[in-house]
Image 1 (cartoon, helix red, strand yellow):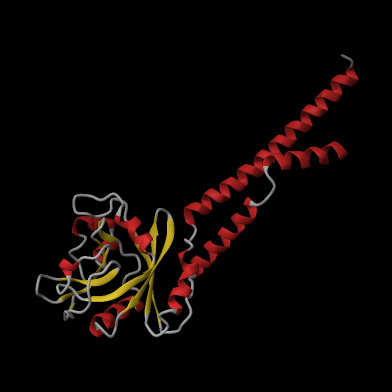
Image 2: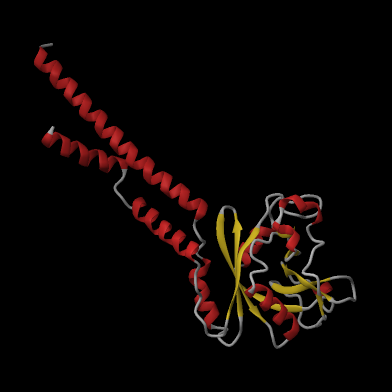
Length: 267
């Protein structure tokens, strides 16, 4: 082989190596962005929530964001003030002051209920006491509503006693045995799939999720008001959009073809 042919083969080899490295790098970059996005983006339930909210325009609605499986997930709850005015007022007041933000669900029983609202659940160090804490006050029990699937009710301090001041649970199925025992003050209108996933997580001997599932935010929408997003949610959605655009870029094979053509013309 002459020196000219050897030089030509060396050049072609270098060009092919550059094509492969650049194409592979672009593919890995896009794959990494999508993987990061899958672990952090807000779920799509909030896209459909406005339509559901419009069907209940005359009622107050609680929008709860949960951190589950590495994602922010959405649950929408209509508040039944006409059935349980004192309970709803207490819940709304707590939500507006940010009481529920950061609290964990300390009970998760598939097919039965999920429960939160204990301020002790803010700290992992007090895990053994989760479920025993409260705001320091109770509220009168209002025996209204049935425990249909998705019913939201206040826990009781003791059977026949007043309602808890902050702890609430969501019925994962029709639980008629609980009717008349606790105050039903809300109904899930969006996000039962989120709660189903929550109810199936691994739990300890006390039905406490092994990996804490926390309430990121719980906000109250006045009747007819738009669903607003936090700055973090907006940022996550923007990241999601960027990742989708990156995913639509040419495949590795297309990138190799384009780069090979480009380098072949100028190299």
